[in-house]
Length: 63
Image 1 (cartoon, rainbow, N blue to C red):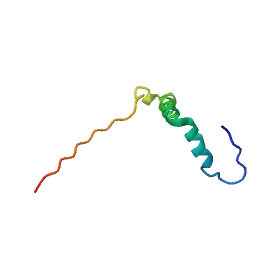
Image 2: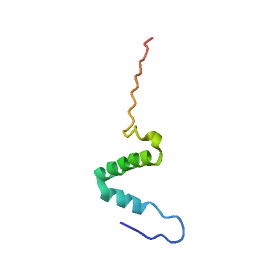
Image 3: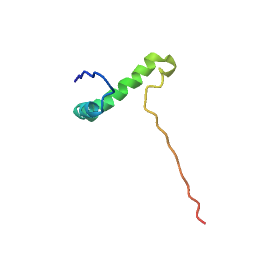
Image 4: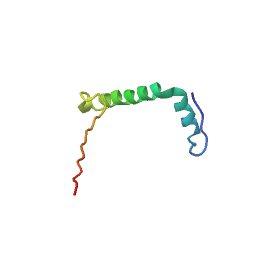
């Protein structure tokens, strides 16, 4: 999908239609492509090609 924008800043209607058409699998594919691109742009991140996982634990004291 493409569109030509002349003049001012475009609204988000095209973006919303595009990502709706792409679907969930396309969104995850695009996100993973960005992860791989980061490794190419900055070699420091080459060994970190994964999603970040964070674990937290909250303990409430009674009393």
